[in-house]
Length: 100
Image 1 (cartoon, rainbow, N blue to C red):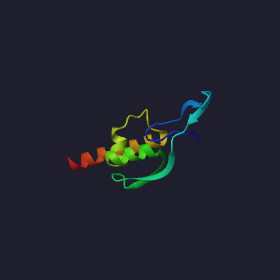
Image 2: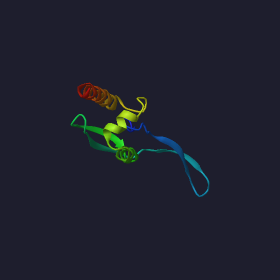
Image 3: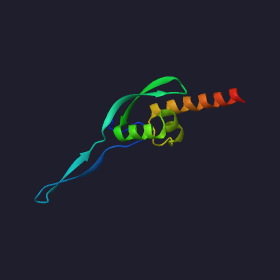
Image 4: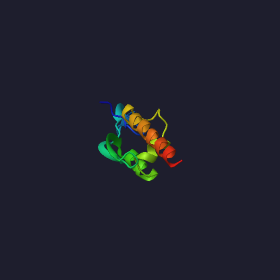
């Protein structure tokens, strides 16, 4: 499984360890990924994702999973998150047509 956040697309970065003698060796910075269950209010279901802690804070800041998925571009999302986004779009359209 790759170390990529399913909601933000944040992945690994490369850099150097630099010693006191200024020797440089390659190293990898990995995102802090957590397995979380996020609740969709409009779909009334919960979904499991591997999300970076920074991504989790961003989702909470925007107002939840539904708002995050509706505003985020499809290129950043994983296939699992894209499926949820499609379901969410269908639910929103059905809600709009029922209200009209």
